[in-house]
Amino acid sequence: MVKAVVADEARIKAFEDGVASSGVLRSQVGLVVGKLSVSSDRALVYSLLPTPPTDSGEPACSLRAAAPSGKAKSKGGKGGAGASSDAPPTLQFDVDWVAEHARQVSRMLLGGMTVIGIYIWSSEGSFKATPSAVLSQVIRVVSQSVPWYGSDFDERLLLHLSYSPRRWACRICEMASGSLRPCDLKYSKLLASLQTFRCTYNFEIRLTVQAAEPFKKVLSKAISHLTKEVQNAKALIDGDLFSDDMAITSEGPHAVDLLVPFKNNLPAGECSLEGVAGLLLFAGSVSALAYLGPKESISEAISDLKVDIIASLRSRLDIILDEADDDSTTNDVENSPSQKVTQVNFHELREPYSFSFPRRILIPWLAGSYICDYLQQSETTKDAMERCKEVISLETEVENSSIVEPETAASTATLESFWDVVPGASSRVRAGPSLEDGRPKQVMCSGRAQGNGFSILAALFVLLVALLLGFMFAFPANSKT
Image 1 (cartoon, rainbow, N blue to C red):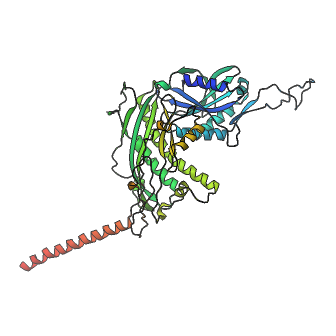
Image 2 (image 1 turned 180 degrees about the vertical axis):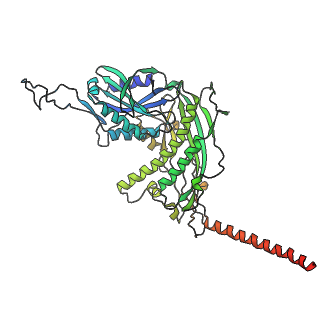
Image 3 (image 1 turned 135 degrees about the vertical axis):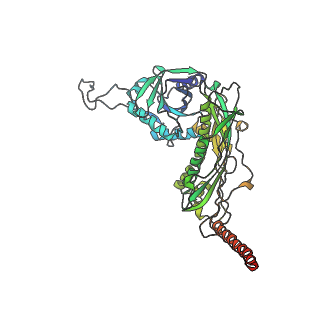
């Protein structure tokens, strides 16, 4: 339960001055970026990001004149349906557009930062005239568009900045009931006191592929198994095994290594060979980063790092799926690599085939912190900067030299293969989907039909040798008697 809301003073004041200086802006909606801290029961507000205009140029938030009241009096003193009203205009929102903005922003945020609510800039009268159910619905839809992994919080923030009079108000939205309760807003130097935790997570997982399984299901299953592996991993922080009573006194980025338990066997669901068309090998590395706010426990940094790893993998898969959907709607004559790979049926592959996952880059943001984006093979850092300016509203130019690329592609000699294993067919090595997260990801499928036949022949050979040896020792013994 959120008991207090603390915002970064410099960022909030700068935003307030900027939006107030626009003069003509009468309403605006945007996202609250921060964290709902489990260990401190506080909501930490790092930044406010205005939602950009829609594709048609319309604002995501606008004012709608109040409907005339039948009880209002006209100038002649008679009431009527067309009588004028002094009620302030209400706020109306393009809810789906705000939710899409939240989805794209959350993809660019690193561990320890996420979209925790919305803010509204309007007059006091318009805000109060807007039904609470409308405000709660916007918050609910935005929350549903943002992935939350392992969070117990069922609350989100609603910040209102009024320009008449000019003041802030904070409310906590209960997601279950939709109720809004007031809460005090305090200020502190949050961004300057953030601690950074970095981790490079190397992984390799093998899973069976069922016949006719689609691309999305195959990769989603692999990421789900990795989620369990990451959650059970132990952590080393700056070389020391993490414990609940650990205290960190040093400043600067902290190096974290995750120790994954040995896999003694395959998951129970992967032991059966019925309906199996292949074996998926998913391997590579993810560069993860998380921020820890003041008065938060170190265990939250470890949890946020693990969330960042899984969220990063899911974001890369979503990018491929989104690009494939965009290509299908535009009816391109030549399909993009993303559309081609999403249409692949692994068990039907007969020719070498490969593709790459987007790789993560880090872009400077606020007070030494970073945001991230993902580059496809045909993209450059310039493409990433254009997306960040549109989605995050970067205020200053970022030079290419300051962009960090922690996931550099390995040599092409490590591209992986997909081996077709349809029963009865000969096992052949196939060049399979390479899932590149800085290092190429391996997807391969190994044959079982030929392997099973070889095992049977070997068993028959051993049995035949045993019978011959038995006869050789038996006949000499009989001749002597």
